[in-house]
Image 1 (spheres, rainbow, N blue to C red):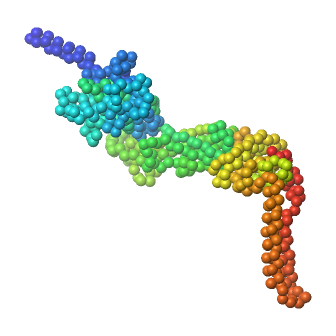
Image 2: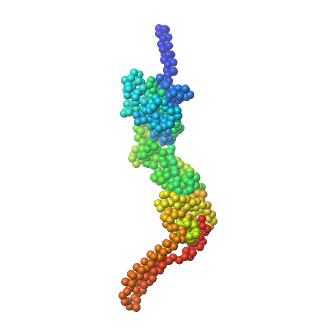
Image 3: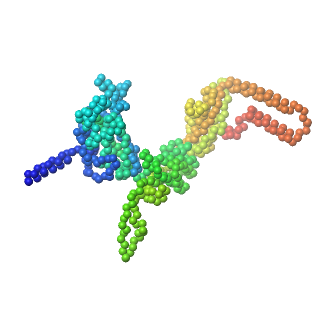
Length: 562
């Protein structure tokens, strides 16, 4: 009996030694650094990293192992792991891992790795590497994996579970094993893989996602790359606020212009559409004493009428519908004759976390909030620019051949410190030239800008006045004639010829109308007609024979020409 007990003891001891020596997922995916086992909430579709890892089919190499140099033909493969974190608790967080092959290598439509044509390699590929780096299709077609001795083992994951047999599964030649939160997830894929995990059972805070990638080999899978990424799970709605103002020169400096509306656009980071069926409201406090504003639109605007520094606050509230938890009746608290509690007849109702108040659908929901706070400065700025006059400068033939035009410009708001003129085609799409000059305006915003045009034609003119924080634009279409006096003289003769034709036609019409005999006496109606005719010819004269521009009071105080 004693010998049997000793034999049984040796068996138990041997089993314990073997179990202790067995490789676990935690050992491999934590890069050999073990940590105490901690209790975690289960993630749907994931498994505990305390499971055994088949290190014969999926060997594990420490960093610095010389076998890494030969794990891939032509160089080393790297992996990049991206995430759409941060994620609101309850939503899905998505991860995308992408493989980066050595130079001149890529994946074809069948999942094989080939050399790119017309790509210079350093060093160049040898003759036996003419096209394929790894022709996995040939391996599969030649033996079908299932029919080859020992190759059936290639169709299982490191924990022994078989590959899912969905369409095209044989063309997925990489195995991805993800590890986080004490659990692992394994899948097959091609040169990239995407998957999502629900965060309902993940604790709030910052976590690490690690992925190990293996490729197919003849007798086993071969490790080729590892990658990791940090992701965040939060109970605050991730929000981003962008601000735009029409005449603001630099939207990133948090300096805005008084008396000009600022547009606030709120973006909620919700890539998994977790909040699609939620009631969302936006509560604004712009910090200028204007009060609180609650809106349902993510876009709103506000105008600051005073200069100074202000702190704006935004609170985003989302009412999220969720499944109701089952009602668990509880026994009422005991009472005694000496005194009673304040419990009502509803003391045995469910005490679920989700609130059932103010829900229009009558179901259960939870509240989530997001917060934004920023400090801004409001200053004087240029609010508006107007081109009030355009004058062509007449020149003699001995002067410059370019046509010169003076633009009289005014603005509202602060005084400008620079002016830029952009000359474009008539559609205002193709820029031809741009000239910028510093200016000094000390009294009122009224200045004359002279610009030269090399060729006659129609142009779009954009004149921008700016200061340190703001800028405003005015546009106009202008038709420019040649700059020499010959062109001006030719235009005058054409004008006089047309004027003579119009005058002859007008005289003929008047003669036909008034050639009959009329009494000398005029009635009141005739007097009115005569006055109207006189006014008509006065307007005609004003149009074709304008008075000298020197009499225009706007130009009496015209400042120096820019």
